[in-house]
Length: 202
Ligand SMILES: Nc1ncnc2c1ncn2[C@@H]1O[C@H](COP(=O)(O)OP(=O)(O)OP(=O)(O)O)[C@@H](O)[C@H]1O
Image (cartoon, rainbow, N blue to C red; front, side, top):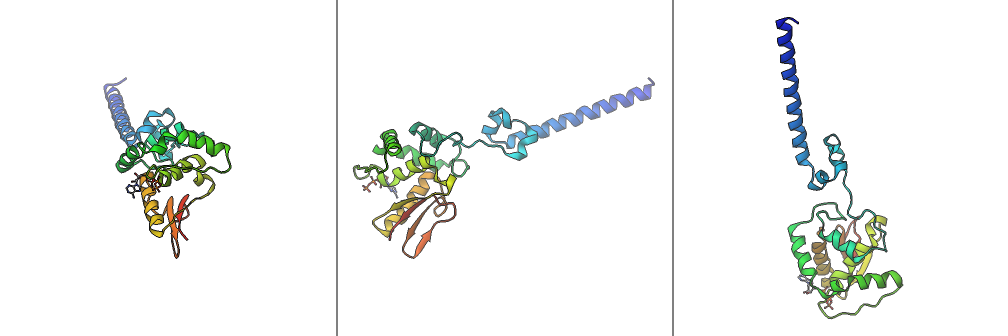
Protein backbone atom coordinates (compact mmCIF):
# COMPACT_ATOMS: atom_id res chain seq x y z
CA UNK A 1 0.00 0.00 0.00
CA UNK A 2 1.42 3.41 -0.94
CA UNK A 3 2.11 6.01 1.74
CA UNK A 4 -0.70 8.22 0.40
CA UNK A 5 -3.22 5.37 0.42
CA UNK A 6 -2.16 4.41 3.94
CA UNK A 7 -2.59 8.03 5.12
CA UNK A 8 -6.03 8.22 3.50
CA UNK A 9 -7.07 4.99 5.27
CA UNK A 10 -5.93 6.36 8.62
CA UNK A 11 -7.80 9.62 7.97
CA UNK A 12 -10.94 7.68 7.02
CA UNK A 13 -10.65 5.57 10.16
CA UNK A 14 -10.27 8.66 12.36
CA UNK A 15 -13.16 10.33 10.59
CA UNK A 16 -15.40 7.29 11.15
CA UNK A 17 -14.44 6.91 14.85
CA UNK A 18 -15.14 10.62 15.34
CA UNK A 19 -18.50 10.15 13.67
CA UNK A 20 -19.25 7.12 15.83
CA UNK A 21 -18.25 8.87 19.04
CA UNK A 22 -20.41 11.90 18.19
CA UNK A 23 -23.28 9.50 17.41
CA UNK A 24 -22.89 7.83 20.78
CA UNK A 25 -22.95 11.24 22.52
CA UNK A 26 -26.10 12.02 20.63
CA UNK A 27 -27.64 8.72 21.70
CA UNK A 28 -26.53 9.32 25.29
CA UNK A 29 -28.19 12.74 25.19
CA UNK A 30 -31.32 11.21 23.73
CA UNK A 31 -31.40 8.71 26.56
CA UNK A 32 -31.26 11.54 29.07
CA UNK A 33 -34.62 12.68 27.74
CA UNK A 34 -36.15 9.33 28.66
CA UNK A 35 -37.85 9.06 32.03
CA UNK A 36 -36.02 7.31 34.84
CA UNK A 37 -38.57 4.53 34.53
CA UNK A 38 -37.88 4.04 30.82
CA UNK A 39 -34.13 3.94 31.48
CA UNK A 40 -34.53 1.32 34.20
CA UNK A 41 -36.76 -0.93 32.11
CA UNK A 42 -34.75 -2.78 29.49
CA UNK A 43 -37.53 -2.77 26.90
CA UNK A 44 -37.46 1.01 26.62
CA UNK A 45 -33.73 1.24 26.83
CA UNK A 46 -33.25 1.21 23.08
CA UNK A 47 -32.64 4.84 22.06
CA UNK A 48 -33.86 4.08 18.53
CA UNK A 49 -37.32 3.44 20.02
CA UNK A 50 -37.32 6.54 22.24
CA UNK A 51 -39.76 8.29 19.92
CA UNK A 52 -42.33 5.56 20.64
CA UNK A 53 -42.54 6.58 24.31
CA UNK A 54 -43.43 3.07 25.46
CA UNK A 55 -44.68 3.38 29.02
CA UNK A 56 -46.27 0.78 31.23
CA UNK A 57 -49.36 1.95 33.08
CA UNK A 58 -49.30 1.42 36.86
CA UNK A 59 -52.76 -0.14 36.34
CA UNK A 60 -51.53 -2.90 34.01
CA UNK A 61 -52.83 -6.29 35.15
CA UNK A 62 -55.55 -4.82 37.39
CA UNK A 63 -59.09 -6.26 37.23
CA UNK A 64 -61.73 -3.52 37.65
CA UNK A 65 -63.88 -4.25 40.69
CA UNK A 66 -61.37 -6.83 41.97
CA UNK A 67 -58.42 -4.73 43.07
CA UNK A 68 -56.70 -4.73 46.44
CA UNK A 69 -55.82 -2.01 48.92
CA UNK A 70 -52.16 -2.94 48.47
CA UNK A 71 -52.32 -2.41 44.68
CA UNK A 72 -53.89 1.01 45.26
CA UNK A 73 -51.26 1.92 47.84
CA UNK A 74 -48.44 1.05 45.42
CA UNK A 75 -50.07 3.01 42.58
CA UNK A 76 -50.67 6.04 44.83
CA UNK A 77 -47.04 5.92 45.95
CA UNK A 78 -45.74 5.64 42.38
CA UNK A 79 -44.20 8.28 40.13
CA UNK A 80 -46.98 8.44 37.56
CA UNK A 81 -50.64 9.32 38.06
CA UNK A 82 -52.32 6.17 36.64
CA UNK A 83 -55.35 8.14 35.45
CA UNK A 84 -53.49 10.87 33.59
CA UNK A 85 -50.09 9.21 33.01
CA UNK A 86 -48.48 12.44 34.21
CA UNK A 87 -45.93 12.58 37.06
CA UNK A 88 -47.44 13.20 40.49
CA UNK A 89 -46.86 16.70 41.88
CA UNK A 90 -45.19 17.64 45.16
CA UNK A 91 -48.54 18.95 46.44
CA UNK A 92 -50.11 15.54 45.72
CA UNK A 93 -47.50 13.82 47.89
CA UNK A 94 -48.08 16.26 50.76
CA UNK A 95 -51.83 15.69 50.60
CA UNK A 96 -51.35 11.92 50.33
CA UNK A 97 -49.29 11.91 53.52
CA UNK A 98 -52.11 13.73 55.36
CA UNK A 99 -54.82 11.53 53.83
CA UNK A 100 -53.11 8.35 54.97
CA UNK A 101 -53.64 9.45 58.60
CA UNK A 102 -57.44 9.51 58.17
CA UNK A 103 -59.31 6.64 59.88
CA UNK A 104 -60.88 5.32 56.66
CA UNK A 105 -57.44 4.46 55.28
CA UNK A 106 -56.92 1.92 58.04
CA UNK A 107 -60.06 0.14 56.78
CA UNK A 108 -59.45 0.33 53.03
CA UNK A 109 -58.97 -3.43 52.67
CA UNK A 110 -62.07 -4.18 54.74
CA UNK A 111 -64.05 -1.64 52.71
CA UNK A 112 -62.97 -3.15 49.37
CA UNK A 113 -63.72 -6.69 50.53
CA UNK A 114 -67.24 -5.62 51.50
CA UNK A 115 -67.80 -3.76 48.22
CA UNK A 116 -66.62 -6.78 46.22
CA UNK A 117 -69.00 -9.17 47.90
CA UNK A 118 -72.09 -6.96 48.36
CA UNK A 119 -74.53 -5.12 46.18
CA UNK A 120 -75.07 -2.36 48.78
CA UNK A 121 -72.78 -1.18 51.54
CA UNK A 122 -73.78 1.25 54.30
CA UNK A 123 -70.61 2.84 55.58
CA UNK A 124 -70.81 4.75 58.85
CA UNK A 125 -67.93 6.78 60.27
CA UNK A 126 -67.06 9.66 62.56
CA UNK A 127 -67.21 13.21 61.25
CA UNK A 128 -63.92 14.00 59.54
CA UNK A 129 -62.91 10.35 59.18
CA UNK A 130 -62.73 10.70 55.38
CA UNK A 131 -66.03 9.30 54.09
CA UNK A 132 -66.75 12.14 51.68
CA UNK A 133 -63.29 12.75 50.28
CA UNK A 134 -61.61 9.32 50.50
CA UNK A 135 -64.27 6.69 49.72
CA UNK A 136 -64.92 7.97 46.17
CA UNK A 137 -61.16 7.79 45.57
CA UNK A 138 -61.05 4.21 46.86
CA UNK A 139 -63.78 3.42 44.35
CA UNK A 140 -61.95 5.13 41.49
CA UNK A 141 -58.89 2.97 42.13
CA UNK A 142 -61.10 -0.12 42.32
CA UNK A 143 -63.69 0.38 39.56
CA UNK A 144 -61.29 2.19 37.20
CA UNK A 145 -64.27 4.04 35.69
CA UNK A 146 -62.16 5.80 33.06
CA UNK A 147 -61.51 2.50 31.27
CA UNK A 148 -65.17 2.04 30.38
CA UNK A 149 -66.28 5.68 30.43
CA UNK A 150 -68.23 5.06 33.63
CA UNK A 151 -68.88 7.75 36.20
CA UNK A 152 -69.03 7.61 40.00
CA UNK A 153 -71.73 9.97 41.29
CA UNK A 154 -71.59 11.45 44.80
CA UNK A 155 -74.61 13.33 46.04
CA UNK A 156 -73.96 16.31 48.31
CA UNK A 157 -76.39 18.07 50.66
CA UNK A 158 -75.46 21.59 49.52
CA UNK A 159 -74.24 23.46 46.43
CA UNK A 160 -71.12 24.70 48.17
CA UNK A 161 -70.30 21.20 49.41
CA UNK A 162 -70.55 19.81 45.88
CA UNK A 163 -68.09 22.42 44.62
CA UNK A 164 -65.63 22.36 47.52
CA UNK A 165 -65.53 18.57 47.83
CA UNK A 166 -64.94 18.28 44.09
CA UNK A 167 -62.06 20.76 44.33
CA UNK A 168 -60.57 18.95 47.30
CA UNK A 169 -60.79 15.52 45.66
CA UNK A 170 -59.34 16.90 42.42
CA UNK A 171 -56.39 18.31 44.39
CA UNK A 172 -55.90 15.06 46.30
CA UNK A 173 -55.92 12.99 43.10
CA UNK A 174 -53.75 15.51 41.26
CA UNK A 175 -56.37 16.46 38.69
CA UNK A 176 -57.58 19.75 37.31
CA UNK A 177 -61.12 20.44 38.53
CA UNK A 178 -63.63 19.83 35.74
CA UNK A 179 -61.54 17.19 34.03
CA UNK A 180 -61.33 13.76 35.75
CA UNK A 181 -63.23 15.10 38.79
CA UNK A 182 -66.09 17.57 38.47
CA UNK A 183 -69.36 18.71 39.95
CA UNK A 184 -72.88 19.36 38.88
CA UNK A 185 -75.09 21.84 40.67
CA UNK A 186 -78.35 23.21 39.36
CA UNK A 187 -77.63 25.23 36.16
CA UNK A 188 -73.89 24.58 36.38
CA UNK A 189 -72.01 21.58 35.08
CA UNK A 190 -68.29 21.62 35.71
CA UNK A 191 -67.21 18.40 34.04
CA UNK A 192 -65.94 17.10 30.73
CA UNK A 193 -65.56 14.00 28.60
CA UNK A 194 -62.87 12.59 30.91
CA UNK A 195 -64.92 13.04 34.12
CA UNK A 196 -65.06 9.83 36.13
CA UNK A 197 -66.11 11.25 39.51
CA UNK A 198 -68.87 13.82 39.84
CA UNK A 199 -70.25 15.52 42.95
CA UNK A 200 -73.87 16.45 42.48
CA UNK A 201 -76.41 18.63 44.19
CA UNK A 202 -79.95 19.05 42.87
N1 LIG B 1 -61.38 21.49 51.33
C1 LIG B 1 -60.66 20.96 52.33
N2 LIG B 1 -59.53 21.56 52.75
C2 LIG B 1 -58.80 21.04 53.74
N3 LIG B 1 -59.10 19.93 54.41
C3 LIG B 1 -60.21 19.29 54.05
C4 LIG B 1 -61.06 19.78 52.99
N4 LIG B 1 -62.09 18.91 52.85
C5 LIG B 1 -61.91 17.95 53.79
N5 LIG B 1 -60.78 18.18 54.49
C6 LIG B 1 -60.26 17.36 55.59
O1 LIG B 1 -60.24 16.03 55.17
C7 LIG B 1 -60.64 15.18 56.23
C8 LIG B 1 -61.73 14.26 55.77
O2 LIG B 1 -62.89 15.01 55.48
P1 LIG B 1 -64.22 14.34 54.94
O3 LIG B 1 -65.15 15.45 54.55
O4 LIG B 1 -63.87 13.35 53.90
O5 LIG B 1 -64.74 13.57 56.22
P2 LIG B 1 -66.20 12.95 56.47
O6 LIG B 1 -66.00 11.68 57.20
O7 LIG B 1 -66.95 12.90 55.21
O8 LIG B 1 -66.84 14.05 57.44
P3 LIG B 1 -68.42 14.42 57.58
O9 LIG B 1 -69.09 13.26 58.22
O10 LIG B 1 -68.37 15.62 58.44
O11 LIG B 1 -68.92 14.72 56.21
C9 LIG B 1 -61.06 16.06 57.39
O12 LIG B 1 -60.01 16.08 58.33
C10 LIG B 1 -61.22 17.40 56.77
O13 LIG B 1 -60.83 18.42 57.66
